[in-house]
Length: 232
Image 1 (cartoon, rainbow, N blue to C red):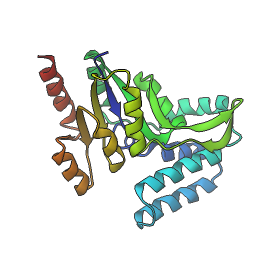
Image 2: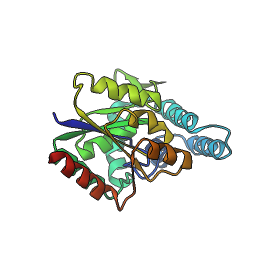
Image 3: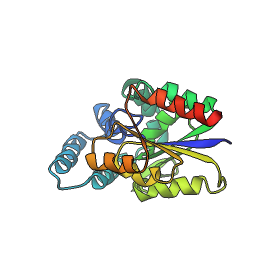
Image 4: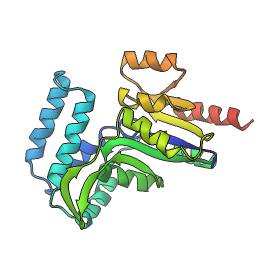
């Protein structure tokens, strides 16, 4: 194993917020109650008004997912996950080529996301990623219980990366993120990329720590140049 590449999902490889896109899709399909539309609007408004922060908005999205999945079956959900992938999932145009580039270089992609596991797993399957660290929505005997696990965000992202690589002390670690929730994870990388960051404070921190700051037009060439230098 030459190394691992850790990717955040929301606004890093996925164009948007996959948890809310997923539960709104399920509402559109009639699986979830239409009440979820109003609850989602409340989360967005509270965030925009500064009443809750980024971490709390993510927590509420996971809470909503667990609440509305309660009593639903894994078998039923699998049908809608497939349809969600086919009709609603929007990955950035560069994602497939970048993942192939890393795989050719012997680097294994890993997804590390605060998003709900049922929303992320179709994306992982599409990209051929076998390892994901996501926010779990619990089930028992094939039925969702309404409970959920810890959010994989902020410090939790750093913890799962260190846990994942503890048996490979000298392995190369490359990380990709876009927001403050990814910073702790990116800080433990050998090479870190910040994709289209919007927060000026975060940009300054990234510059101070020598992160690559990239966008859609520069990301592939920047990675290609990095891998080329390492192979020499």
